[in-house]
Image (cartoon, rainbow, N blue to C red; front, side, top):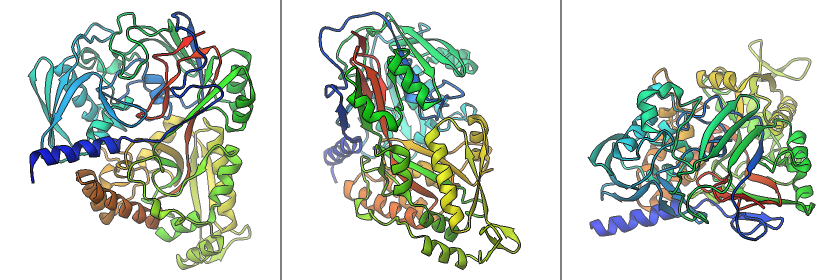
Length: 551
């Protein structure tokens, strides 16, 4: 996602950044235009749109502290980003009016858009951008995402009111791309300075909607920012949003969320239950739109930092024991495609040459477990070694029914080869804390981003959580060869060299098996036909409401 002579190097960088942002194509149906809008007629202002979300509710609304799947949907109404990424993957100025990159890739000079104000009246300027970059990397922020995304950020220098010179410690090709994500959106610098403790509960941005209230476990409400006049490039209109208000309701049960759409209780549902997609498409009163998310596929992650998955043969065995296609087909009703590697095909530098390398072979799984010394079996068929059962603890928050189904089916497959997976229920916060502390064996999840640099974020040893910094290498994998490949790839400005390095890294990950890649997950959005002008935040693949209106 994230991306001789000086003219030649500049050209190479430009071409690379454009290519790096490509993140898949829209697949729309149900009467949706290519931009995700339904119907026709002139847009009109007014009304409150109600969105039904699943129960993947964050514990904090500070974009620099968030890591839930629904983050972009919840935060994008409030916050703008420095850069905007369009459907074709091209980067455009947004809160940044322009930028220049030094030939060595270490200095970025941003000219900022003038006339922008935050919801608390604070002006947007170079000091504000600097404050945000410092907030992202501040250990006190405990950023699970932004700090990883801008890890090469060194410092910055205010040149004048609207110009900031940013210095990196090493070349970092994805830098511009990550700045398009809502995880690195701009918070009011006044709030960062005067009330940083309030960013979670009362977020202040510069976006088209102003945060109203968060009733935890139930809903979040927003109202229109009447002064908004700096919408993202490619928007269908200028000025304030059409909608007077926006409400997000957390409806954890799939059936509840779907029935709420049918009854008109909500106007739009995100995370449409896969079992209902065909019904939505067949309903003349409803519309459906989808976009593929780039990044790391939804996976079963294993903790390589402790037994039993500190043994690569045990990890490989569990991968071989799981019939990934059977699980994905049964859970998604044909809406998801089985993953073929550690990045999705819509991600730049996806290694198509490695397709078919992850297989289903229970017999070979048994052989690997024998080789690992787990040769004895108890009366229930679970393998033992030195009197200890081959047991793994899987954490399940229960907020996503499909995730629970995946764990249950994985548990059944593992038992057939002699691995006992014990599923433990935990709240999202407890699961997050235990994962960060390494107190688990199995977890599930997805990591959406528009760059193969997701592999560095997920698997580089520098990203293992420490007391000083919370990283995103939840598998706690530490492999020198992989670290070297990923570091060289993220610092490379040559397309061919970078692609080759990422191919080697993906092959190494298949060998190391820190995770079981399951499926490439799309966003599935259904809506009432009176909802018009739905669009996408393409830096993530999330629905966006700036151009939306109610017919």
